[in-house]
Length: 138
Image 1 (cartoon, rainbow, N blue to C red):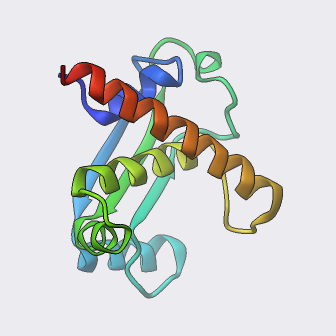
Image 2 (image 1 turned 90 degrees about the vertical axis):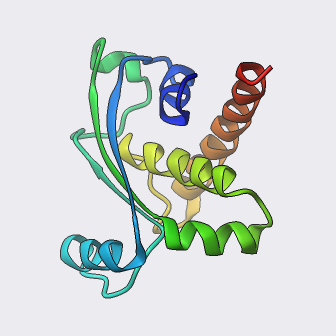
Image 3 (image 1 turned 45 degrees about the horizontal axis):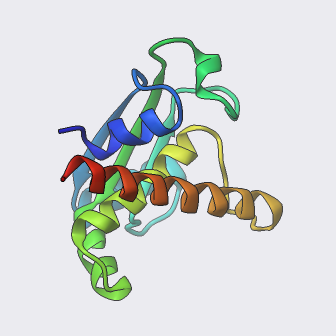
């Protein structure tokens, strides 16, 4: 069975794209967030892109692009899954989609138009991911 990361890359039209995923705890992601973003607190996800510009079409990157690294705090996943009343897998998928979009250059930090574009892309990818999961599990 394909992983969520593989399905996301399939949906984006680049099935051989590569990314690394580290699922860790609040302590380690806190240290990484402080080191790389100057924020002295844990976060749910960090994305470290290998791309130099925002990508609209993954196929532009060639047959097997290296997208970058995603780090997710499992401690935060558990809290957020409870808060959002979803399963742990659903929350990990939501964060993975969010992280992949960051790897591709999407941003939401300053709000406005870019945040709306990213939120719309997240909704579309999550819908496709859930639909594909259902098909694969039949």
